[in-house]
Length: 263
Ligand SMILES: Nc1ncnc2c1ncn2[C@@H]1O[C@H](COP(=O)(O)OP(=O)(O)OP(=O)(O)O)[C@@H](O)[C@H]1O
Ligand SMILES: [Mg+2]
Ligand SMILES: [Zn+2]
Picture 1 (cartoon, helix red, strand yellow):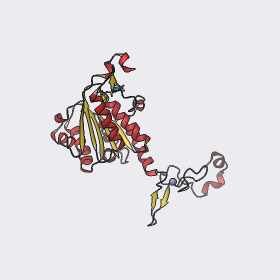
Picture 2: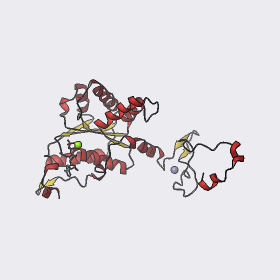
Picture 3: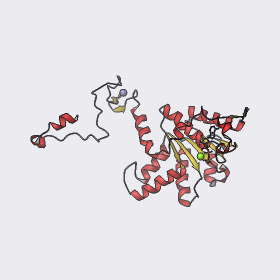
Picture 4: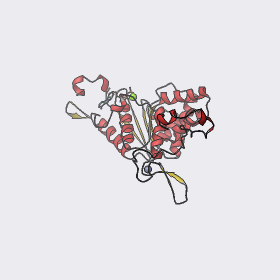
């Protein structure tokens, strides 16, 4: 309700019917103002042939909600939002670096069609793994595909926090957050293996990856660890040639390249 209208309410209105709850996520969207979707008239829902309400396919409400729901868990940063395929260099001192070309092309192919695929990039510090994770995430977000870019330390921290919160909501409970990581349309895990592993973190990681493996859900992983060196159940799933492309990024540390090579 506009502020001016609510100011007109007096004590006499006190017993009138309660205002609808504005925080109700199921409340219909006001169709006042500009109608941006002619298909549903900004209702964001349409009736399907069986008379059931379905998110409007034109506004892509379900996708937008999914994108919004993933945002609080993302490890996106000011730096990552600027990392794209275009500013990923593959040529230094006039020479094309084949390993970087391979990594770039694999990441672009994954971003263009992530469904039913895994991409694992492993390599040394500063070789550009996180840059490519961010570029994939930015590309998918631009395309309206819900992707969750999260570092393994952030993922574990959010689960530890959930245990402390002892809440029942999807966003705050341990089970709710596990379901978000298990079912995200595209999950991009950076820095896998960056933390010392424990039986708890191994079991959490296995549960997430095994679910995504069995359901063939789009997953990208970046790690400093040789895939052979993970727990054998994880190592084996990561390297299933029917599902996963494993690629080594053997480029030297970009951070330590002379400035003249970065221009
Ligand atoms: N080929 C490249 N072209 C342009 N910038 C790059 C390239 N490789 C790395 N960088 C930049 O160098 C910095 C380090 O790269 P990045 O964070 O991707 O490394 P990393 O492989 O994830 O390293 P770490 O293992 O330490 O996490 C970033 O600012 C990134 O944008
Ligand atoms: Mg990194
Ligand atoms: Zn619509």
